[in-house]
Image 1 (tube, rainbow over the protein chains, first blue to last red):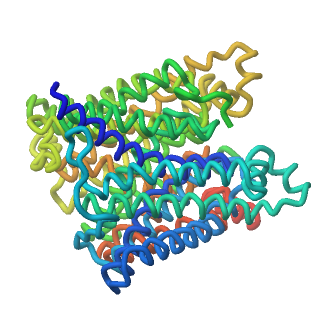
Image 2: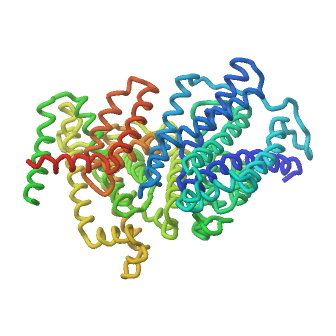
Image 3: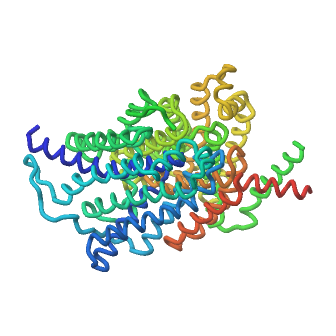
Amino acid sequence: MSGDALATIVVSALVLGSLYAIMAVGLAVVWQALGIFNFAHGLFMTLGAYVAWQVASGASWGLWPGIAAAVAASAVVGAIACELLVRPFLGRKDVVLVAVITTLAGATLIENGVLLAWGGRPKQLPPLSTGTVDIFGAALSAHEATIVAITPLILLGVWLFLGRTRTGAALRAVAQNHEAAALMGLPAARLYALAFALAAGLAAIAGIFLGAIRFMSPAMGGDPLLKAMVVVIFGGVARFAGPVAAAYLIGLVEAVSTYAIGLYWTPSVLFLFMIGTLMLRPQGLFGGARR
Amino acid sequence: MTMRKALIGLVVLALLAALPFVFPVPYIRHIFILAFIYAVVAANWDLSLGYGGIFNFAHVAFFSIGVYGYGILTKIAGWSPWMALGAGGVLAVCAAVLVAIPVLRLSGIYIILVTFAFAQLVLQLVVSQSGLTGGMMGMVGLPTFQIPGYNLVRDGKLGYYFGALILLVASTGFLRLVVGSRLGLAIRALRDDPDYAAARGISVARQRILTLAASAFFTGVAGAYYAAYLRIASPDAFGVSLLSLLLSILLLGGLASIYGPVVAALGLTFLSETSVDFGPWRHIVIAVVIVAVVRIWPGGLWSALRRIGRRHPS
């Protein structure tokens, strides 16, 4: 393997890892707070990308207002989805299962809503920054370089929010014991909605990242959601660092596998890798105690 | 009481058997054939998910394995369609045992994720082996069922209607047998209190393998029947839309009820097939209906029907 190839693999691993980390952290936040798995998560990504496209390219107000609008719109829809699709069922014994079907229904709703609003023609977002950057001999678009550079900042922001602010502490308290938290006067319903909004806003950012690399379609969220699922299984959700580390590791495995055996077999390699890991360590690679 | 139940069962069966003669419209038969097949798949899923409490999301993959098993065995290996029908069930059971291995040590949401990933893995395999499976295009023109001198598709699909009804009755009988057996008691005990059940000597690993294998057989047969009826095997059989349709049938019908999925399969298949022309709105309406029903009748349609039956004892 030449140095060029190595650099290409590393760069590709970092870009994929960034994307997966942002998606997976959102999944993990909702999972931690509500104990459910949100199958509509990929659609918040789609929604964000399309809102950003509408503001940035459709109305030509520029990319940054587009990003702001996308994150806001996704967060609002996320909070509404939590209120309508998840919270009514929280006390139920079969909530895990019911949440699968209601969030799947939510995903269907958003996907077809996007299809009605914007049609099925592929669209593309403008890149975050233009031009190319040369790192260790690998030509990298400035857009991808921006993704790699700002993702750690975003993740740091989320980590600080969850770990260092009162709201973040309240969110964690509700996640650990919602009855005790409610007795302490924490507004559980609002905190659940906040967890969903935070996750959806993060997904919107991932959608903006991806929307300038690949073409956008109403079904664009499916593949990243699947990868984010692999990531959270892999990393476990017990600690914030788990899914993040797993995201970059999965990005690396995917990049190496794509280079070595091709795009076609890569998903199978990932899934086999994951099933194998779980047989040896059922709680995930970096998982400690599980929820 | 059991006499009355048996009587109701016989009346329903007689009505279903008379239906194709009362409404001699092939389109209505088509909807019922699909509904019977979906009912078999959903009711068998109920065995692992509702009775066993195992969140097995590879169940739809068992169905697809039946579909592709039928396609490959009849078209490439040249088996007779009837042999391939049984083989579809056997292949699905083998897949179930394979899935059971990683599932044995996991619990709750992790099982959902791993089984979901298993289904995706099978899909990847099917799509990549395009020489055998036709890849993304799938397989078309599969052979249909024949009994000597008669093709089941003749007379407005009459043969397929009764075939599907027999399949549904056989599968329902099988499920009632399993649920009432020692295995059925053991898996419910494990679902309700795993620690106590294990302390009483029930082996978690063995029951999980048996449950998954038992739930796979008729699911695979239904897949093969589906392939023989539509004469295609396509990767759509792995799709999220089929998964969510079947899961909705199961949840709307009510968990751990066997008959609930049958009722819900008829309702949802009817809704889904008659709204084919409405494009995106079709999916939106179905999604809203699903959430509304789960919200209004937490126990599913079957328990709602039973409650009505109890309020008005006839």
